[in-house]
Length: 244
Image (cartoon, rainbow, N blue to C red; front, side, top):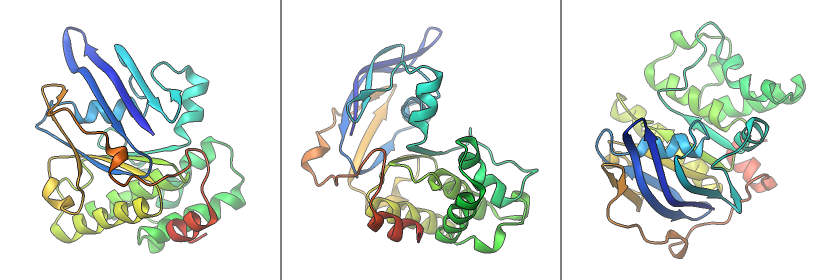
């Protein structure tokens, strides 16, 4: 599903990524590990098309996403959910409106939005918060709200940047459990984290250092990756992951 081909990302003279190569299968759950500045977040931002590589190519499915135009990026992002420090909640909007935002951007009808948002909030255990402001939630609840917004579009790929940072053990375990649940339903998950110990059931890992993958990763397609469609999902997925 995902392939980086000799990808370099530079900011001025600084290389955040240096000729990175790896391949991940559909339906996998992968941890990106490494110290601050190793390149974890850069990989997620490239996959979210928030950045474009300086050189090299990135394939998702059979399509290159390295240099999409504005219209193409908008279409591609409908299949991607992203949660991270650089994507903030709207603190002047209630929780329902925060989760509904991606659906309104793509022009979904209000009746469809109602059903999808309620299902997403229920899946992350926040049904009771729909009329509350994000500032009224705990840190762990705010993170689960971000996850609800990331998955409300029913994406094939979810990217999570430090999803357990600064959470207590109980809240972190709940977030990890949610990501694992979506992965079991067929969603490809990639997590950048300093807290790999919280994901002790995840065996697919890429270690990064100084903008490079260390050591060169194996092709995970031989290690049990599940098939999952990039643009659409089965009724079984919807019933398991969204209750709809």
